[in-house]
Amino acid sequence: MKAMSILAATVVIAAGVFVVGFPAKHALAKPAHSEAEPWTFKAGRGVTLSEAAAKALGIATAEVQNADMLPEHEAFTVQVYRAASENPAADGMALGSFFLPAGEEKTVAVGQAVLLRGDAGEFEASVEALPPAPGGAAEVLVSIRDQKSALRAGSFLVARLGRAGDIRPGVVAIPRTAIVDSVRGPFVYVQNGASALRTPVKLGPVQGALVEVADGLFEGDVVVTSGASDLWLIELQAVNGGKGCGDAH
Image 1: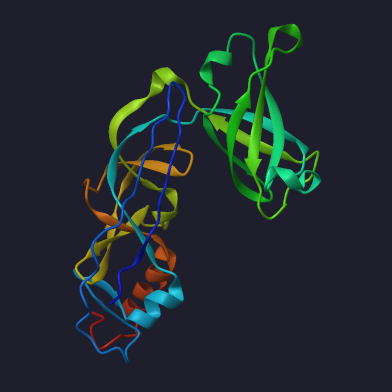
Image 2: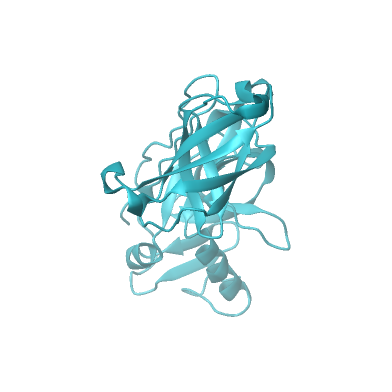
């Protein structure tokens, strides 16, 4: 089987720049089942996909690493004042701003990455400037990556920020896209040879696109970051009667 593509995640935090990388991992072993079968499932081994099935599902993986996390706490409303479509020279960047209470300006820094959320989805942004504002408040100007021009002037987004003093050093972290929520609790799919094995996890704080894993994973594990929900549906189908290569039991 061809190696699953690797997702890279980068986060920049206040009090400096910190990069969390998810580097390429060695190729997965070739599955033992026939390529005529799109998938197999076996308890204790997990889901095994054919090369064509993995490609069709857009499977991607990332290696679990230790990271310094800055948990998100406070939420602020960001208003877009210039859409990306209004400034073609800005290369797909919209502009927005929000205000911090007096004395809170030290909780953010120019260059800090901020993940914004709204009705149009999630957007990566970075702090551009911290000009003084009337009444002692601090205005935070942010540039927002909006390649599809989904945001309009006047749109509102939510930014969640952490405090530099709350940094949690050296915790196990993975992309949030690896998490599958179910009535059984959150879990991820971990590379197990040529297969992907469902593994329950206990989650900690969130920082942007990353989430801390308090229990269930170790540094060096490889998790599925794109297509995990599809693997769960395949496993459910296998357990509830649909079998791949006669292995679903």
